[in-house]
Length: 129
Image (cartoon, rainbow, N blue to C red; front, side, top):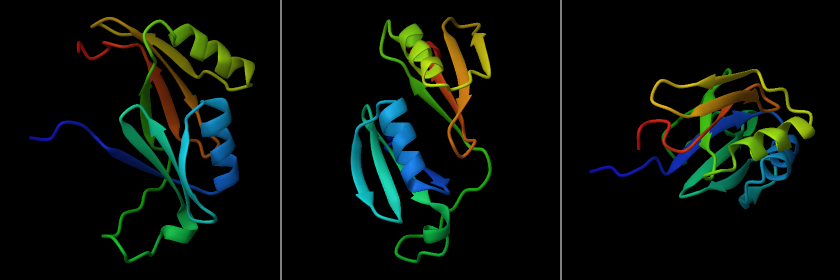
């Protein structure tokens, strides 16, 4: 059986801006980079693949995949660090668009990356796990 999502890909316009946001603002470890093509980050056991949209749109090494528009990703905060993460983002000038309390318990908040992807930070256990 399948056990987890290992990779998630988003497509961006400016890799340096993306790298600065995900590494410096969100604090994700950079684990791979090829100038002009991609930057990769570790998020717990998963990998966030950020591809230059123009440079990779028509590649043929792997089956074609591409995404446009404002995609959604949710990150789980380490236990007890939700408020700290939110405050750090606000201090960095990131606008929090919404914050919700969920019926199963837990909170989440939404914000945008430089390419307008909709990002969410959730408290552990938000899905009852």
